[in-house]
Length: 363
Image 1 (tube, rainbow, N blue to C red):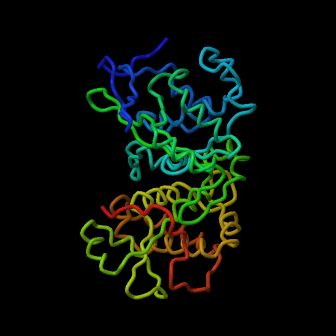
Image 2: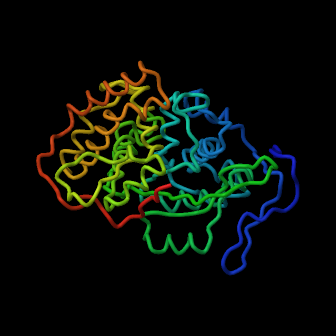
Image 3: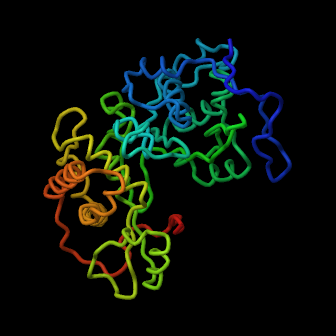
């Protein structure tokens, strides 16, 4: 039996496509499952704030993926055949993964922040299965978990040849009960942005890593963000309070500046280091594992090192969220990790990162 979630009723248009096609939904939204029970079945921490819509959506989606091999038995009216021969090891990364691993990033925690969606990565051979599963979530779990593919989404998917998928999904409900939507990117095998992060081995450890890519790969994907700008942009950075993103690298041309992580990523990195010590145990940050990855890619190692050093040098930014003891804990752990990461002696005077990706605007 469906569980109505909001007070408004009637047909609501989520999106109108360029050809006039509308993607409609009946309000109130429904849910056929209890997200709290699903969280507990998956063995995920109770501190994860499921009152936050993207996390509720993500946890239910994760449950569907893990049970993909038997959804046709659980929901025969929705899935007329087996979705996948085996469970789909869908993994969280990005802000959702931080919320799974870090109590400080949930609820009223000092490093809690909003996320517009949940980021997933799956094995490439399971990408299409997971994509199709997402498009049927509303029929099996309720309209609260509805996703659809617009013409632009389908065009993007055709260009990517199974490397990535894109669809549009509900990511929240307004105060008056109407849903909001966002574009969701689904990655396959690796996260290829400023640097390529190969995470294939994480699929084998998905339960130990709480259905995420793991702390080490999470740090790597957060600290891979880098770009450069003309030095004239310094005033614009100051205008928007982002001068703390300027990385110190004296070997770069003097008429350019190098820009590192956005504040939201700095916040996430702080949550990881506040809540997790350096070590080789469960829920510890394995420095040797990160060093092994970066030893193979010195360009990536330089970017990661510059971003982490910048956090250590910007206590003023950390003071916005943390007290003195917490700041010292974060800094000590980052410095401990940096001692284990490879030293990069080569010097670059031009971009050493992938420039053929979208650069976030300064705002």
